[in-house]
Length: 311
Image 1 (cartoon, rainbow, N blue to C red):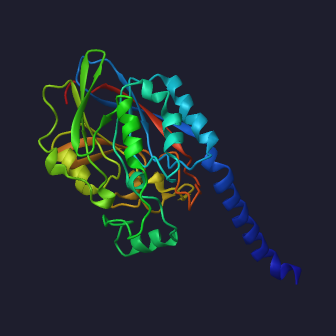
Image 2: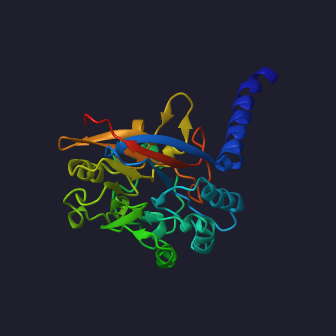
Image 3: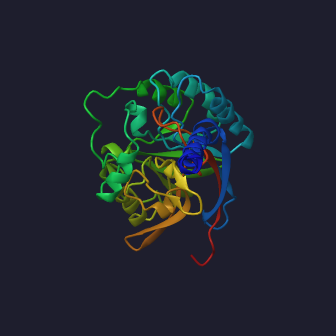
């Protein structure tokens, strides 16, 4: 009788331990990813760009707030925020407080769907089902009727008052030690707010360097940026897969990007051009699925260096 129940009890205990680790430990194992990207014109000095993404702040997340504040010690040249700052309508003051030290540096931002709308309780297994059916998360549909509207205007006003550039379907620029860094941004493709036609035309040739910024790395947006000749695209949204299998990787991306590029640095080709793509795994989760496994929360310090002279 004991042998009969030993295996199922062992499996249950292992699963319980895995859930406890995913919820209570890995979600708090904040780390910094460091990446070097050879994209700058020959002769430019290296630029250090801090990307923060998918904070999904819930009121009371003190450890996350302390970690975000500590990132200012990296002293980046500028900061890019790729959206989904909120997972709680009450979280705006805590986001602004946590990012306050970083807002002392030049920066820019785009929003994600969770900045506009509160998350809803959803069975995580649906993501796997949708992948099997060839669908991708919300698949670009509008949020469900009755979704909670987050106070994104307050978040926007806080970022704007600090001097960060709002890249919502528009272009912006930062001055860094005499260099002009041109930025082209899109609103979130996950809820069909992207309007690439409004920013089409390629990099600003009068700037020293140009890059594209978007929250969700849907292929239509990546194709547009790459085809227009942007050397670098930054995105978030995927949470790195959030629940990954060790030695295998992510099962889903919550968009139509392939799982092989769910996080970190890769490339994207379209229209005869190749762009570097960096997707942040982000540092938060939805308040309804506060779990990470084999995919710790992160921010990324990208060091942009000269591209090879022959390219």
